[in-house]
Length: 65
Image (cartoon, rainbow, N blue to C red; front, side, top):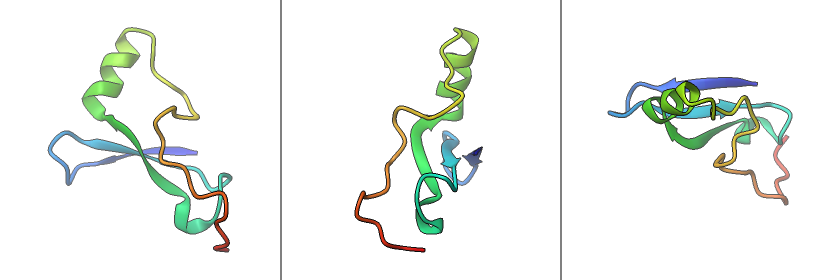
């Protein structure tokens, strides 16, 4: 499981990469948090190590390998 930062966005949106959740197509997913929000949570002892509560979930009927 990795956390990635998308520097193409102005606020540095973060993504979760977890190959154990579904197929390779749904491995990367946005976690609904920017780098600034995550750092603020971390400073206040509220950062998530995972799983992320706002992560976009793969459909339960996903049939991709």
